Image (cartoon, rainbow over all chains, first blue to last red; front, side, top):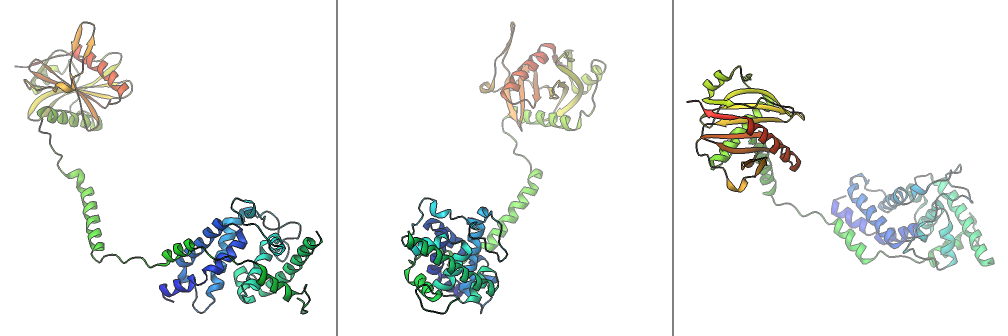
Length: 170
Length: 237
C-alpha cells in the first residue's frame, strides 16, 4: 500500500479510534494523546502492516497496546486468573482516569456499569458489540485466542447484567 | 451465550450497548493534527543535498587543518612579543627547558649566549623554586629566560629581551606597591596565559604564568614583586 493511500485509509478510522480511546481513558485530553500516539506509531511502522489484513483491527491493536503501555501498565498490581482475566473483587486495572481532572462523567447506568468492568471485559464489549468487529479481529486486537474472546464476552455480559441489576435495585 | 430475546439476553444487551452508549467523535483539532502528521514531507530542493555535503566536507577539512594554519600575528609589537614569550613559556611547560642551567654556575655562559647580564638574580625563596635558566631567541632578539615553580605547580617564566623603548600599554597597567616600592607593569593576556610586561632600563621584561583567575592574579602580583625586587638584568655589552 502506498504511503499516501495508507494514510488516507488509516484516517478513515479516526472517529472510531477516538471513541474507543474515550471509553478507555474517560478523559478527552488523554484520549487525544492516545489517538495521536496511535497514529504516530501507525505511520512510523506502516511498513509492518500487511496489506490484505484488517487495517482497522491493526489500528485498534496499536491503540490498546499504547494505552496499556503508557496509561495503565504501571497500575497493574493484581495477579491474573487462569484465563488472563482478574477475579471479580480484584480488578486488573484501576479506573483512575475518571477521577482525574477533566474526566467525562457517565450519565447512564449502562455507562457506569461499563466503566466498572475490568479493561479486558470493557474492551471486548466495545470492540465486538459497539464497533461490530469480527471475533477474529477482536482476538487480534487483544492478542488472545478467539475462544478466550468468546469467554470474555460471555463473562463481561454476565458482570454487566449483574451491575445493571444492582443499579436498578438501588 | 443465550439465544433468547428477553431484555436480559446477550442480544438485547448488545443492542443496548450499541444504542445507548454515547459515541464520541474526534474533535476537529485532532483531525487537523493527525492529518498534518500524515501529510507527506515537502520534498527537499535537489540542490540542497550536494550543497550541504560540500559545506560539511569543507567544515571537516577546515577543522582538521585548523591547527596547521598560521595564526594571525598581532600588529602591536608588544602583543607580538607577549605571544612569543607565552609560546616559549608553553614550550617549557610542556617539554621543559632546552638547556636548563643552574645559576650562578652557568651565569657567564648564559650572559655570553643571551647578551643579558644579571647583576642580581632571584634564585627562589619559600614560595618559588628556581627551575632553570636558558638563553632564548624570540622575534629576532636574543634573551634569557628563567623558570620558577610555585608550591601549587604553576610554572613561571621570567624573560628578558634587549628591546629599548618597548611600548607598555597604559590601559593595561596595574599599580603594584610594596613598602616604598611602586611599579606599574601591564597585565596582558594571550592564549589563556597572563603576562606582566614592564621595562627595566633598555630591557623588556616579561613574567608569564597560567594564573588568570582573580585570586591567582593577586598571587601573581606577589610573584612579580619577588622577581622584580631581586633581579637586575643589564645589557651584557
